[in-house]
Image (cartoon, rainbow, N blue to C red; front, side):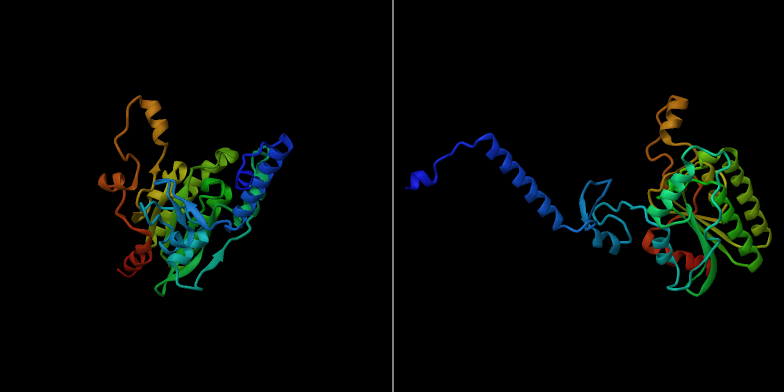
Length: 288
């Protein structure tokens, strides 16, 4: 009887297919028990991390210290006093000066996916009761690229800050000028830089914070014009990417080239500030 119980039975093709199907159903049911977003994978150390641990650690990897990119509203909640933020210039008209194929549809899609109107949020708030004008760029909206609307929002923020005698804090994160808008996107470099010049002539403070990545036309304009330039650890900062430069000059670049630590060593950045100390550091700067 026992021999019959443990006897190896041959399965027909139909039986095998049913077993495989049952296995797939079981896998689907098992997977459904894990809520979406419960875990995240660190791109640097490849470890699977509990999402709550990432959040409690200021969106950095608890294993290797790698910085996760964060949304503008998360950033604002980290550095501003609770409930103090008032947004400026939301829902400006869409810009499509070249009638670039599919561009407007892509913008509408990004608005739905990110719950943002464009690749930057601007407004006013308080840091330890000190009023500031603040802007935060969004890496998840077309890689924070700067088109007409982004340039206009930043320019208006700086001009309002000049009128109201407010310091400006701008968290930069961008892949550069937005190619779908051609020369119009490049014009934003001059426009934002001129607004910063007038703000400076009024004797007001501008603090630029470089996050990963800050490149292209953004790096070549308002990102590097701060009276004080801060950076997050490991942030990529440069005009062209390392691979493009290596291919152009035909030489191997130094280790860590264009990272925040390299820029600090060579005098392009004033201080590297960890994310959990950013609000405190900005508060000290504003009150100095």
